Amino acid sequence: MKFTKWQGCGNDFVLIDCREQEPEDYAALSQKVCDRHYGIGADGILVVLPSAKADFRMRIFNTDGSEAEMCGNGIRCFARYLYDYKLTSKTEFTVETGAGILVPKIILAEDEVTGVQVDMGEPHLLGEEIPVLGFDGRKVIAEPITVAGTTYAMTAVSMGNPHCVVFVDDAEKFPIEELGTQFEHHALFPRKTNTEFVEVKDRSHVRMRVWERGAAITLACGTGSCATVVAGVLNDKIDRKAEVQLDGGKLLVEWAANNHVFMTGPAELVFTGEWIG
Ligand SMILES: N[C@@H](CCC[C@H](N)C(=O)O)C(=O)O
Image (tube, rainbow, N blue to C red):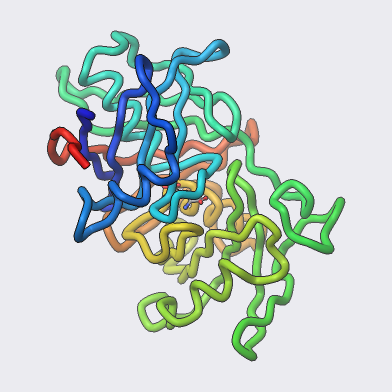
């Protein structure tokens, strides 16, 4: 099985083109391939598939084998693969995902790809849409959540996948290794959750660290960065356009007036290979 390995802000993926042939078990494949000792090593696998509704279809599987609805850093890598490997000559195209049909745009400067911007669609804010138990018909803004005996204010946002955003005084010092898994598996989240720990630097800059559902700590999360900016606006902590500083790089996120969230950032090929496992 031929593959390409990609990273976006250090969030890394093995991409496999399954338009011709699909593996029997994506979950088992993802667990094996993502293993950093016995496999290739990655935060997830991205799968290229044909689509009846869009130019292409993307599926994403986490390191634990679970399937996610969407992946922001992943879709930039996916889009760059399609363009660099000439599966399309368009610089803007449609991709069917678990979060609906999204639109990546390749950014070029003198014919060189300098990044990818993605129209990530509209955020979903009602409790049942995210989902968060006990919040049907209501937004979840600065609501209490108790983890390991401490109560935090959480704002929940779905970018197709669930996010719990917690504003903290010091993102570097927050004990994410210890508490991340407890947020992920908290009883309020029937489909578990990704959790972003966010320090506001000023109204257009935030520092964010993430614990991802199904993948633990990663160096960056694109959907998490979008959720962070939406949550920041809902709490009147930041403006609608902000730079998100992650462990592995920066993303620019704008929650535009048409209610769509636009995310811009890098996507880089790391290496190519053949999986014989
Ligand atoms: N890193 C991704 C999100 C990947 C999926 C996530 N772990 C989930 O299960 O929802 C991103 O860049 O958005």
